Length: 192
Length: 192
DNA sequence: ACTTATAGATAACATATGTTATATAATAAT
DNA sequence: ATTATTATATAACATATGTTATCTATAAGT
Figure 1 (cartoon, rainbow over the protein chains, first blue to last red):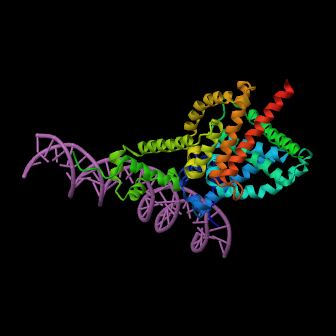
Figure 2: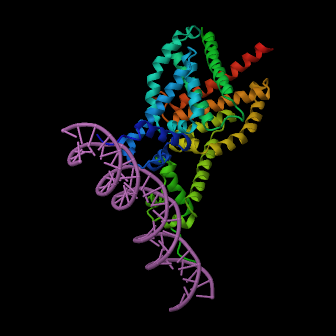
Figure 3: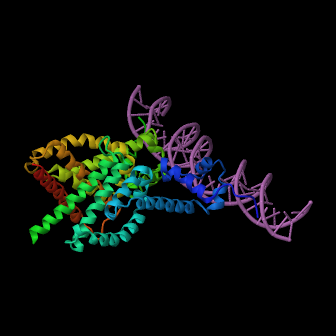
């Protein structure tokens, strides 16, 4: 019983996301969200207990988008897929990406730790990486995670050379992966 | 004429810097600075026109610190020196480093562009890199700038493995530099 | 000694923002 | 039809923050 709701939880999150996308997560205010929806702040407080709850929902939304981007990449090489998905996210949602890297040290930390074993497993399936020990794979993975974060940050902050395209970024990502793996093989060769 | 000043411009910047160091640049407020100095906000407005002018001075301070760190590294290899100095800054002033990377896309952009030609020149002096063309050197430098930003970001956000020491970071930085250079040589060999 | 300029303290003002109290209107249950 | 519920609008309240007006006291110039 009661009037039909004109503003849903999803619409509110949508509005908040749009603001975050152009101005940054910190620039979200209740009144801006209301204005974007053409409402007052009342519907927000019906759907969310307070700003913290809204932020949680927004973070979930952001994560689900980054997951969707990851699912859309499907070359079978999870290594490459993650790198490219992260790049796409950093480029399409650069402001949010920066905010996320800044704030959610804690979130990313958990995510990374959960991801590590899965990725190592995937790497072990790759015939090209068969010869490496788990420790060697860990080093290779770490190097690539570092490079990929750096590349995504540069993309998000427009720090790359002028006219650097998404393809260029993917190329340099692959090329560096090759560098790291090839050198690891050479080192192993010398030690054998 | 007038009373002796009890609070100098430098003291104010010091206080602001300390707040930025522990809480982030955005957490600086006039009242917090005053509290830290044991004064009211009045001395701040005597020394600075407004908060923007104070922020400019703070950025200058931050830049001068990062320069000091760079000057303290002096292995003769500017490539390595910059990497290590950036790492040290990212670790010692992690909160500020994150803020800087976020905000001062524009500042960093200029800095990087100014730095590029100098670094390429330095690289050309290195006998180990003699054989490379300028374009090849640019690619190598770009790869290392990307890796270094990623590593510094990870250090600043505690995203590296547990107990990862500064020495470990320097090691992985050197190791990746070797990877990139060695692979570039191999590629050149194949093309010849 | 007197005047003047000014550093500093204090409090007020303006604005932004999260939150809540109240009023209104719409809808479902009776 | 009446009542109860509740979504929404509005306005107020609380707080945080930059800024400024005003007052006091101090040091320098005369």
